[in-house]
Image (cartoon, rainbow, N blue to C red; front, side, top):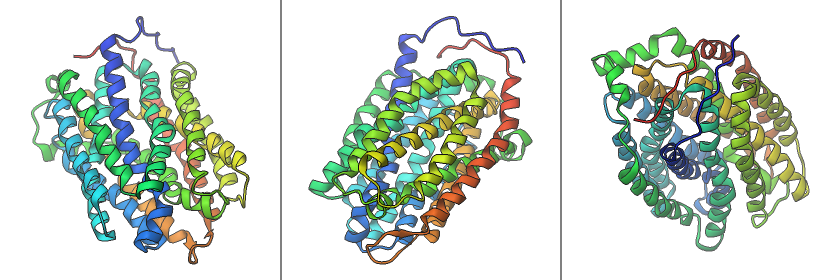
Length: 416
């Protein structure tokens, strides 16, 4: 197979701005979702809820995000992507504000649903913008920088969120997200140019006919199948990671931020490095390596007993580095699946598949995992085996997508 030619120029100043602002809004969206896990150790006793109820609170976001993605898919390619991004981001901020003032489990559950309805579409719009503005041969680097949002949420957001929650309660991190998210919204409104190139490629089509086209094409269905299992690992392990770390591994709530800080720093460094490597050594090869390492670390992690803090940090660093490599490579490959006229709708449906399958995974994790009182979580090793099997299956599912992406010629693109 002929290797695509390298891009002739570095990113322009505007391209760097686009990457930075998309990474920043992803930081707020990811933090809003991921903060639920470390806050679980505080929320569960304060609200008097069981692991199953907490799993439902986590998956409520995913289910509503999945539903909104399906509803938005038929219209995703009919509007300027900047306007779509602003609309859903404002709604996401409102939902997060509701989480910050929730005083009962039922209120929190409703707030998570509202947040998911808007936040779940932001990722698909962002990926569509990246695919519109950057050619495939540099998309790994772009995804690598955008993925630093996940790392930043670990390095800055989660430790700060835990600090705030330890001093002012679990509501404080949500209010913090609303505060910092306002800056991203202003930057988008003032400086992001309209993204309308897809409107010229899109043939006039009824939104429902457009949606049917997306969910009925064989090449798109292969992408959706891969995404379904890609979401399983994170959604299954994440909801109970803080409870497992505290109750099973013997890490205190005051030590917990160091675990997330270490993993986040590793991901922050690994994101751009692995993004560049995925462009040079091959995205599918990078995905396979990340998956193999991830499976090994998951099986080790889920079978640990009481463990010293340094070793817990090492294991989490290895796990998050492997996950970062998988995410960068898989998102780059999947972004090559849709045609230009279908890109927004495909990304919306694909995001819905990820959220819905992740919601099911989070709820199933709540069924698999058991806890007696405030004691250690039981059957976490079983959870690890299920996640390992799902991760292994994605290697086979991603191969046809890799073959599809390899047929796309290198192109030169620049922002509208």
